[in-house]
Length: 403
Image (cartoon, rainbow, N blue to C red; front, side, top):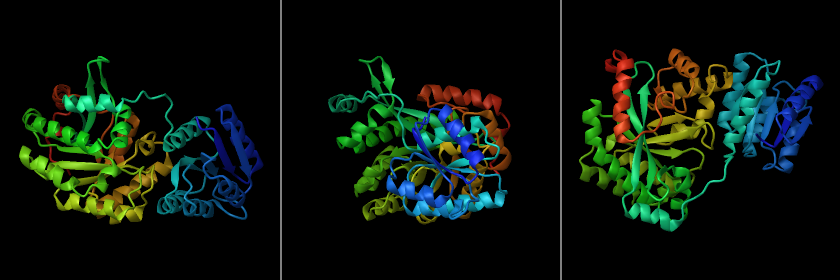
């Protein structure tokens, strides 16, 4: 749980109620303010200290909309929760302001305050700040080099399906390492930071792409379709002007159409340098797809989304979880759906784990779905078995044309 929070609320009774809930959840330091101006002054005094702001919209001196705008202008990086029972059009305006000013709006609380919903939104604030609950045992540089040299890179595939008809659209390719010494497959959180630190990330990406493209023909034959393959890349790799050419050469040697390959860049690390933007553009020129990953938790606003050459945008899991109950997340997804249609971008809802979220999205949106509810990342043999089972439960839908 987060440790610090600011409450901007002019109602003393609601202040007390929120204070009581936050204290019960273990929030160590809580500041109550009667208006947005006092909250803003406190944040400016120590911006990195305050992990979350819970704000009403209707307040004296400085209202909630003004506070959202000011927080964006001041580059506040904590989570923001709106606590209001005002009509949806007002909430829509708040969302628009937050998105246009790069504010981390994690959701809304209707009044009276629901303790369970408050807990969920505080957890989302914690995730935005990148909190890691457990100590990670990173590989050593030598261990990572040994894995790369001995071809122990394993592609794991997580399917992306049309949420209306179940058709397999693509797969995200996730990197794993086979580690005989530990008798297990190692997840990327233990070696990607090491690869970035010691300038091994290009080598790792190259080997993962090569191995996946070797699998591709077998995958297509077994799955009965030609899914697109999506690979995560670090913004650090966009500093390398040779990266697009190198990736193109690998595809050409494998005889795979570059249009079948998508590179995902996370929103959590800002891409502002001219060299990075040029490399993004060159990846598109070389025929690759580009996906903006984790949208809604990082730095990109709607204007930048329109300007960058992305072919796909992935909505972060923190906006998808419990979307059936969260008005703010619903408004954000509607806005993104409209922009995606206008600019011919694919829209992906990732991190779908609950049936209620999947059903809500299917009833209200037509997009690409990804998450544990559909399938966890799997090896090539496991993903082929998964697809056979998936077709049995979606026999008609999976063979129909997408709308």
